[in-house]
Image (cartoon, rainbow, N blue to C red; front, top):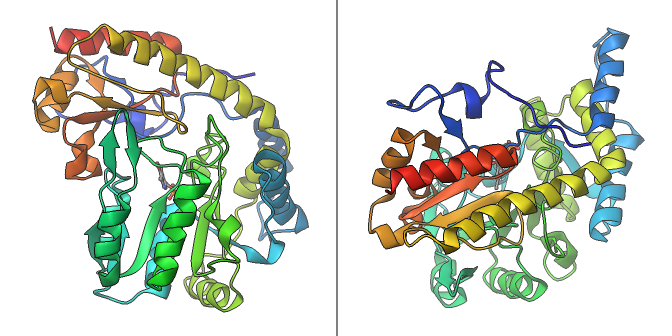
Length: 377
Ligand SMILES: Cc1ncc(COP(=O)(O)O)c(C=O)c1O
């Protein structure tokens, strides 16, 4: 059963941090984690492991790899091979490592803003060059701009895909992914595919790993962290079908001694992939209802629009009718007691938008809408 919890007092980014000038009773709907307990079987497995009381050096066994293969097959109908899997401590780590291993300083890396802001910072921090291939927003949906991509791809060495896309909520369809992969292949550009939101979907998901026979200069990054609300357990997996590329990546992870195993994280992942599906389906239903509440509410407002995303638990609220800059919208909302993610954090293409995380209780969602109303009265 899905259980909502008050997370205050747990060093939570979301509930225990506050921007300046925020009121005491601030509602927080920014960072992408959920206010729900992880699936009961995961908690039970962790309790039993903790009760054992010894946390000596541990290795990843067959069950670790088989649980991911089983999950990809049973939930997504996608076949992956055991040897492709390289465990990593996080998806952003996997992106940074891919940049380090497969590109060089100064190389151009394409991203599609508005997009998850660590894509920008990871490229910058690793001394690569950001190339922006902005998404196009038309009739309440975002599309890739392939014409612009064809112009820019010649200056690029790598491309970071967000699939499903945070913050706009697109679950890219097979034809979009195929077109993208063909462009990258023609231009010999390496694909880093961030698929952390892959399980949080309201339609069929396609992974770029399904195209490995067409193009195998790819690293796909996947994780149970968003799906089962265990992001601080830091567990993720890279899927790299090409053996030589995989070896280079593995050597890099090993050289940093980041291929160690945390038994609790491993236990959480294996149990979640084996026994977490029912919880996930229930949780997605609840999230969908919260989305309906917000989208319906915006229909009667003349200053904000919203649409149903195809995946993620994030809503991308369009405040452009207010003609205010996102910083001003952010300040207004904070003053009225609501912390949403500033759209400009996702690049200038996000100006005028705010991202709202609805993986919380219906009560909080409804209170948040009242606070938005108060801010724009
Ligand atoms: C698209 C995307 N990638 C990666 C992450 C974070 O991944 P990790 O915590 O495994 O580094 C997030 C978290 O919000 C995300 O939205």
